Image 1 (cartoon, rainbow, N blue to C red):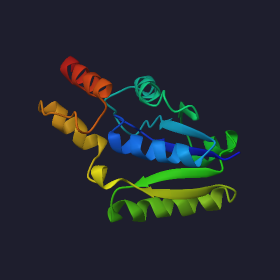
Image 2 (image 1 turned 90 degrees about the vertical axis):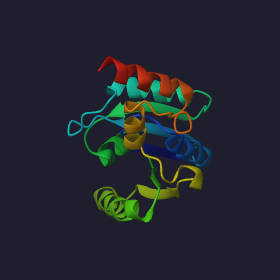
Image 3 (image 1 turned 120 degrees about the vertical axis):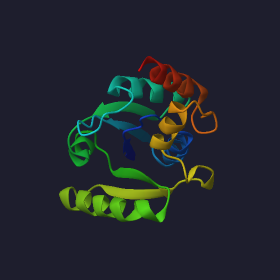
Image 4 (image 1 turned 180 degrees about the vertical axis):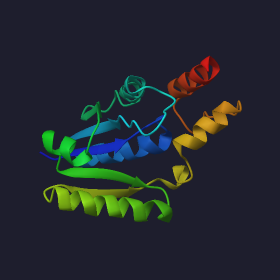
Amino acid sequence: MITGIYPGSFDPVTFGHLDVIKRAAAMTDRLIVGVLKNNGKTPLFSTDERVNMLQEVTGDLSNVEVVSFSGLLVDFARENNVSVIVRGLRAVTDFEYELMMAQTNRVMEPSIDTIFLSTSLDYAYLSSSMVKEIATYGGDISKFVPSVTAKRIYDKINQN
């Protein structure tokens, strides 16, 4: 059985993330979407809110499980019998950092490989930061995130 993990902050989940999730789910028997609890960042959404949003938009994918984690990815992967880490690449600028992380993870845990999926051209420019900025200024984000996510983003921004 091939278990993969697609880790990230997903603050918020975008159509680009969903593209990678669906493609990775088709390649694995079990795909864990790992929502990172990163104390170094101040996210718009809490970890639980991000997990809930991802569960909502991936509910139709029977082999996808959404969980949060903290600490080192390789430790979490080891604990969950993960054999492959999935990373999405939008542009060449992502590659250098992602390659260094993949090589470091491989040294720390040689039994786990990293695969890179190039993001669909439809979403190659898209980032969660960009979505939040557009929403902050009242822009239309419906082309970038699922409608349930867009509503939550606008609600959260209007609360602050």
